[in-house]
Image (cartoon, rainbow over all chains, first blue to last red):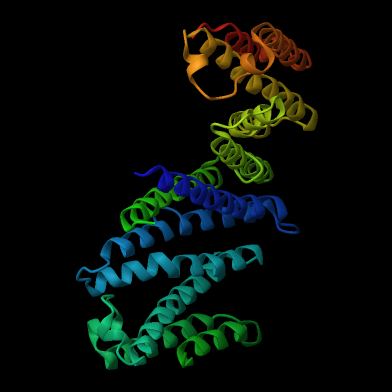
Length: 189
Length: 189
């Protein structure tokens, strides 16, 4: 590798290492009024979402899939790992830090999984509406793999599933999450 | 940047991100029989040692100093941040996990700082003994900056300081750390 590339890599890696480390350090050092066992649980959750079974895995598979034929299962793997897992961890960490019990936490986790995938499906549907973008790009998308009607049907099912998870909670408390799911489903851009 | 470089960077960064994340996740998820507040404290300590005020800072300054004139203060900065901080965190995390109080922890921290720097100084002294290595390399070293005699004197002072910190502890319990300091000071290669 040319020396200029190597130096740029070292600088970029150092920056990413510093920021990634800061995230964990910050949660550990700057979380107040939360019991330590919940802080530990949140850090473990975050670590799992970002590491080799989470974000990193999705990123690698996504990069390596460029220009290749991607199956629906592979597309879902990429979206779940590259995007949805961190969204899931964000929601779950909120429930952990907020004092939720195990059932509360698993309910919001399921909610988050639905809206994480929903976000990607809607994104693909919207991209498909940008004239020609779908045809020019090599990237696999839900409309390309299952057709636009089935993609829309999937989006509708995901919203319904997400909302069903929220039924477990008090309406007033679940309202923001309810509206978030509908917002993601209905956005036009 | 050429595409091949970029792809290699992404793969290397992903690997380093995965491993770094795994370290934090592991401490959070796999530490047993230690109170959670101590686990949190250890994670904060580790984060501080590895991040932008620790290992990353030392690495960046070291790389950017290649081929330039480096002062004694800059050399010490590089060694402290690139190597000694993580060694310090390792020792301190041991004290935290092992149930040490604040004074115990600060004593071993000071001990670790001494042996961290001692390690580097002795390394430089030993490298200087390898015929010609000192003259050929551009790298700043303690013997080059302060002379071999003063470098040896510094090493002796650091060992003495390290051992003084251990005097606070029960002899039998401090013995391994005592012998470690002497080992570092007396190794010939």
